[in-house]
Image 1 (cartoon, rainbow over the protein chains, first blue to last red):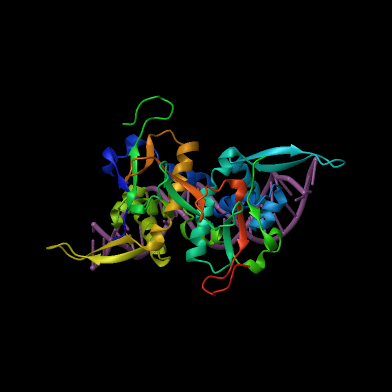
Image 2: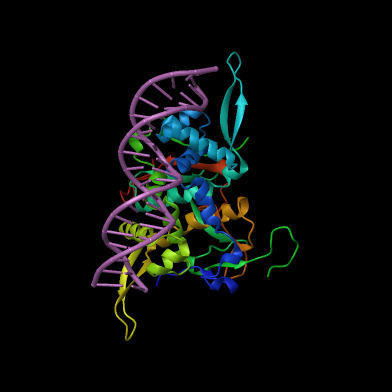
Amino acid sequence: MIPVVTLVGPLKDRDSWSAVGHCPIEKTMAVVGTKSAMLIMREAYYGTTRFDDFAQRVGITNAAASARLTELVDAGLLTKRPYREPGKRTRHEYVLTQAGTDLMPVVWAMFEWGLRYLEDTRLRLTHLGCGAEARVEIRCADDHVVPPDELGIKLGRRRGDGMVPA
Amino acid sequence: MIPVVTLVGPLKDRDSWSAVGHCPIEKTMAVVGTKSAMLIMREAYYGTTRFDDFAQRVGITNAAASARLTELVDAGLLTKRPYREPGKRTRHEYVLTQAGTDLMPVVWAMFEWGLRYLEDTRLRLTHLGCGAEARVEIRCADDHVVPPDELGIKLGRRRGDGMVPA
DNA sequence: CAGTATCCATAAAGATACTG
DNA sequence: CAGTATCTTTATGGATACTG
């Protein structure tokens, strides 16, 4: 028996979620749910900032790079900043925002899964601070590792309204 | 300055990665890189197993559900199993495999990001064991939380070849 | 270098109708 | 209930040419 996520309280009624609003996963997919958008984020994490480097390293055309970069800037994951090297003319660079950096767990979780189930490379995620291998995992505020069958979804308080959890 | 992932050793040469092979993120996106595939995985985590429930709860047509479910079974994230309730005829159910369950960090990381940056709902991830809020994070084998600027990618040993890390 | 503009091919997905 | 079969629209993205 493969365990699944437990829906707590009113959420148990899977067919009447409309009151809850749209699914956050769905909305996230609307922003980074294409191959090129996800790989552009990967490149940004690798330190790429220039238009041409994105296009070349992701392996997409200028048109696709342009469309995706514009969308990612509009969605707030990247910012387009002007900069100027001495003696050269003004250029633009695409730099990660906090929202963009906060998407890292998504991308590295894909990296890890692809490594385990689809790839045969020697790539590894590492914690540079101590040299140990790194991985993406689900933890709770009390620092427990949360196994799949102990993960729940519930309705909490609306952020910032000062109320106690429902 | 937003920190980025550090590429260690030969990987630093971003323009000659061909020796490393294809990117695991790219391959993962080839499997679950569509809106419907990702939402079908979400449904599987919520406990959905039947064709019609997938189609209805994800909000896609039968044709789309059929195509995506077939792909996910082929990719090994779901299995199609016959089952029979007493007095009824044989039916099929789609159940999570270990590979499917192991994709959870990807999906819940998207959930968390969407919640933080795109949504205004009261949904929360919880550790049922202790009641504390859950989140997806990057940790190393020595149990340190790995901040973005301390994450590295390097070439390790090939799995199962018994060699020490390069 | 950093794009835009066009045109074209393929993939994702809705609508609708039909089958065992 | 669990699909398949068409047909159409939209999205993704390649190829190529052009611009500041």
